[in-house]
Every structure is written in structure tokens, then in C-alpha cells.
Length: 578
Image 1 (spheres, one colour):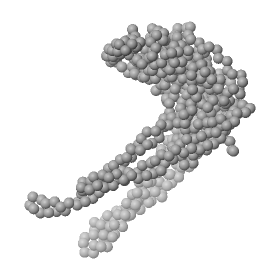
Image 2: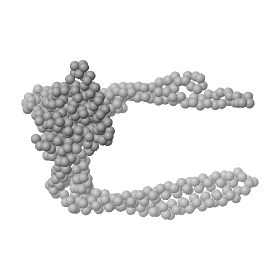
Image 3: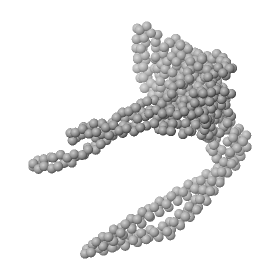
């Protein structure tokens, strides 16, 4: 096995980052050549379009300035007319006084109003009309240039494939392979060999998923939408008034008016929704070991902070080992205090297998990964439960891991290339560092899964396609078509197999959500007037609602998705009219 794989974390910076970018650049250039797009001509047209669009933007700013000026002029006319009316009214009412000043003001205001009216009608309106006509021409010119650019580059669009992202990853890092979709065979391999379970919880639904193998060992990356119940505090207020009689120092009394705003609150249940992205990896190495690591963000520590934290942490771990020994436990300190403190898997339950897993090379690799701020540092949770490993990183929560060729489409071949490289480089960086905590462990790389033969008899499977893929497809459908009519929250989608025949799964799709009913609680609150008052607090009661619709899932090579027909991962889901 090569050193680049054994030192996986370090190799991203020294080998794979640049190698992937080179492969992606070469692929894009080959696609352009195959499409027959004239790059030089497109660049020329794109520059002409940008120049034309800048002229449009500049003219729009000037036109906006003229409109603002016209607005100020209209405002000035209104103010001047009001001034004339007010002055005339005062002159009429003041028969005996000196009204010369009012007359002068009225005359000046009238002259200003007339002048502004003439300015608008004779100059501003004509200038605005001229600019609008010119702007329309420039917009039409820019639009035609844009369409020319699209016509020139559109042959390239047909060459983009979603699979390119996965193929580039496999080309750069052959140790990783990706499945077309998360199939029943892959699910049963993870289920039977490693204990992976289907997601049956009604409060969790799969939003995105892909799977594959790392050196022959299976993995699946899943993003779930999770609904949980929490509480929300609602606030209300009531303003009260009262009077009191007060006596001053001279013995005089006076009535004093008081005002006070009373506040009250109530706390009620409320559903909350969040997404969680997790990599699940099966490996037979250290099969009896469980532990967990939480992010320490050691990459943010200075050298002095690192030394102090390691010193304090080592003393704490030493005391834990002493207590474990007294109780007959097996927990002992690692020889590498820095690793023991930063990785901090102190609740490990099988010391021998833990040490077999985290050899000196594994410790070195993980310390590099956790202490290096580029690109992410120690931002990951690493949980091992027997044969299953779970990686959930902070960067992975915002990673858009659902490739789409729409990300690359542009009028400009150079901009198209920039977007192509940006997305694919980001995808590779994310998947690489999702895998990095696992690939830093040489024993995981050396331990190959026993060959698993997918069942040949499809009837032995409960369905043709996994519930994970079905939920992923369903979550891409138009929610208006499947959500309960009175639902006022997000929805959790679950599927149940109704019929399986000829490679088609007919499923009942249940959308779980909540509707709301507004209530008012009156909270008795003591006021400054010495009395209790009922302060109204409005709050929402969340009531579960659900709706059943029916969909079918089949294999398909379609590419175009619609609101009621969704294509993804070589599968097609569509709503059924029953």
C-alpha cells in the first residue's frame, strides 16, 4: 500500500488536491473539444455581452437618478402648492394685519411650483423618455448577445453528466468507488454484516444519499431531516392606567396619572426541524470496540494553549485510569498524551482493540488531521459502535453533495469552467475529509470485507428499492402535492410498500406535519395599582396532521425532472392518480 494512502490526511495537500483539479480540468477541456464549441468565438461574444450589459447597468443608474430627481421635483411642487394654500388662507383670515410677508411667500411658492412643473414637462420627462427608449434598445442588444453566447455554448451542456463528479473522485482516488444508487443489495450487506438498520422513525426522513466502497468496505453518506419536539416561550403585554392623589411639601394635593405595561409569558410545546449529514462506514476491524470522539477544534489552539490543555487533560485521564483500576476496569492511559487528550475517546470499552486500531501511525495521521486548520481541522464527530462507524462533521452539514449539471450552465465557457471546477473541487474536498478520520487508520485500510454476494432472488427482498432512496426522491417532489392541506410546518415523508412487481415499487407516501390553532391564555399579573390584571398571551397549539398519497419508483435513464416526476440516481419516482 502506497505512502500516500497510509498518510491519508497529509496526502490531500501534497498529492490529491492538485491531482483532482488536474483531472477535472482535463475532463472539462475534453468535453469542450467533444462538443465542438468554438471557445475563441464564445469568449469574444461573452466579452461583447458583458460590455453591453455594463452599458445597460450604467444607463439604468442614470435613469434611476432622473426618476429620483423627478420625484423630488414632484415633492417640491406639492410643498409649494401647500405653502400657497396656507398663505392664502392666512391672508384671508388676517384682514387688519400686515400680510406682505405672506404675499411674498405665496408668490415665491407659486413661482417655484410653476418652475418645477415646467422643469418636469419641458426637460425631465423628455430626458426620461429618451433614456427609456435608449435603455430598451440597449437591453434588446444585450439580450441578443446573451442568446448568441447561449447558442454557441449550448452544445456543451449536453455533455455534462451527474456521474462526472463521482468518476473524477474515483479516477483521482481509485480506493473509493461509488454506487449508482443505494441499492437493496448494498443495504443488506450493511445490515447483515455490520448491523446497519433501516430508518423507521416517523420523525426522520432522508433528504439525500449516496453509497459506495472504500477499499472494499461499504459506506453510505446520508442527510436526514429530523423533527423533534421542544418548547417556545410566547410573550404578551397589557397597559394599565390609574390615578393617585399626592400631597406636596406645602400640603397641596394633586392628581397623578400612572401608566404601566405588564408583561407575562407562557411556554408551550413546539416542533423543530433540523438536518443532519452522516457518513456510515462498515468495517470488521476491532468488532467489539465502541467509543466516541467529539470536536475539540484543536486547530484553533496556540502552541501554549495546546501544551496547557494536554497537561491538564493528561492528569485527568491519569485519574480516570486509577479509578478504573480500583474498580477492576481495563481503561489505561495512552503512551501518547497529546493524542489521548485531543482525540479524547475516554469511554472506550475495549482497550486492546482500541490500541490495535490506533497504532502510532494512526495517531500521527489523526493528530495531523485534527491540528491542521486547512481545510477543516477537528470539526468532526467520530462514533464507533462495534462494526459501524459514524462520521458527522461540521463542514459536512453545509456540503451540497447532490451533484447537478445546472450548476455549470453559463453563457461563458470560461465561467462555465470556473463553476465546474469550483463545485467538483469542493465535492472532492468534502468527501475526502469525511473519509479522512477513517482512512487515517491503517488497520481499516488493510482489513478487507469478506466477499458479499447480493441475493439473486429479488422476491426475497421486501422491495426493489430502499426506503432511503424512496424518501430521497419523495423529498424532491413538489411539497404542495403531498403535504396535508392545513399543514403549517415542514413535513417528514415516510414510505410504505404497497405492491412490488416487475421492477416497480408502488408506495404509500405519508407526509407528517403540524397544523396550528391559536389560543389566548390570561396570566394574572400584579400591577402597580395594587391589583391583579389578566395579561393576554397568544400562543399556538401544534396538532399533528398527515396525508397519504401514492407514488411508484422504477429504474429509468430519464434526465428531466418535473414537479410530479423526479429522476435521480438512475431512479424515477412519480405521483400516482388513484
